[in-house]
Length: 494
Ligand code: EPZ
Image 1 (cartoon, rainbow, N blue to C red):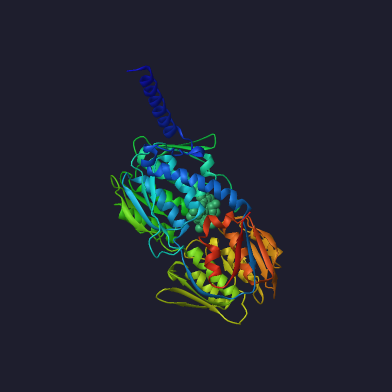
Image 2: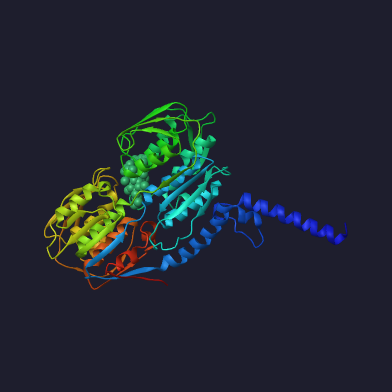
């Protein structure tokens, strides 16, 4: 071979080695970017996609940090709002893809920042994924279809940089442990709504036979001989704990019984999907779930259930602003306690073949007391929104938060709109006022931010909501859904 030929050969070899290293060593913060002519990266669907996600999220990050939402209050809402797939069901379902080397196809996945963050976490473990493009005639709000394939898991560490962005990322610990016998997952840390520990998730995995240690902010879990079926008794209802126990138990050896399990519809949805993948689960949706471990799971196709929190939010928005709104695709059985409270407040709720219809014309709102509780009680994720609604009621209502100890961040922001709210321990006393007034406000967490949207819809004048990236984590196409019903709402970028 000529000198030139040898040189070209060496260069090719060095490039191949570099590419290989780049692919293997890419830390989550620097997910592999496909290069021009990088065939292998293009084939590695998930990794290549991850690069796109990174660019998009970097872009989103830049945009959303400065994005604000402007709402001019006073318009009634009339029309149809399509309800998206549930974020809190989509996330554990996506994580369940780690349990099998076969493809899990999830339909009706909402387009949300949290879904993108989780895709990055999964891609870091080696999950390849594809997002189906839009089909002819599909609306902007039509959920996406994700195909997730964890053919081989290349990394059992879920790093701080990713898990700190989204608490649900911690839940990868269970399928990683079940499938590979080890996992190293960053502690998720605190959050604006309370301390949110993971002790019960750890307890569940220990019951299943895992040895767990905390090392430098990471939970290191090991089960070299596999997980074993066990009785897991939760001292308090935990959604994430129940997801973790389920994903740990499905392929454990023997039978597990989960007591005081969360009955949330998102838990039932995960169980349904796991059953489609070949798991043997009885009692999901009740407080005792029995899981008979199976040797392995297959792929499946599953449609994410409609978002009950989004449904309740728009139902309250319609009750607040007045008008007539059809929440298309909503399932009333997922939020009966909420619909009852809204009806008691004075809105008319009817169930049609297409979804749930909410009307309020002229009449004022009555005060209604609520206490948050695990399902089927009033969900904590709708407490802030209901408080906004009650801020215009004719009288005082008492709103009690029993799930999280610090979920009243919205109170001071609602007060900026003129709401009169007094806090006393876990209770908020909301004295309804005749009129709210637009003001600049700050979104603090996901559900708190949308309570400000509800307040703003009925406030006189203009409200500017800052830090709307919180909203983008959990509400798909919020502005377009509301504006097509007549709300005066727009996003200001830059
Ligand atoms: C899920 O969080 C939801 N998140 C939350 O929604 C929701 O508010 C919450 O359930 C309650 O319904 C997702 O599904 C992604 P928990 P999770 O474990 O699972 C305590 C949103 O806005 N606890 O049911 O983290 C905990 O502190 C989010 O979409 C322990 O003490 O909640 C809380 O008081 C916010 N130790 C109670 O249990 C533990 O190890 C219930 O929390 C775990 C939880």
